[in-house]
Amino acid sequence: MKKEEVPQEKSVLESANMTDLYYVTDDEGNFTTAQSTGWDAKAKALDESMELIRERMEAARKAVAEGTASPIVYFMELNKMDFGILASYTGIWTFFVKQHARAAKFKKLKNKTLQKYADAFGISKEELINFDGK
Image (cartoon, rainbow, N blue to C red; front, side, top):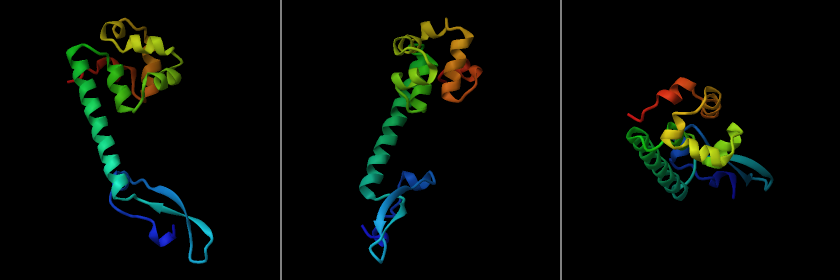
């Protein structure tokens, strides 16, 4: 692709002040790089994935509010994590992270464990403990 052909259509990337980096050819045929805010097909795919993430976050928020899940579930969705990723960030086995995602188990966690989760999510321990989904 030539540098002047790099698509610059509106997308989620543009609204987040982000761009993709592409290797392109310049007027002399040399390889160089160019920034792109995306193209229509990519914008649609990003929009759909962001909508799915919002839906999953809302479902997690409701589960926390209803007491069927712990705040860990909501903050995992917010940070686009799964159990394996969270386990690697906290140093807690995946089996236990899944257990801690249950409201009853979460209430029994020690401060040290809660702090590990808070650190992984980039929030304070109090924000984690006091999140009630409302």
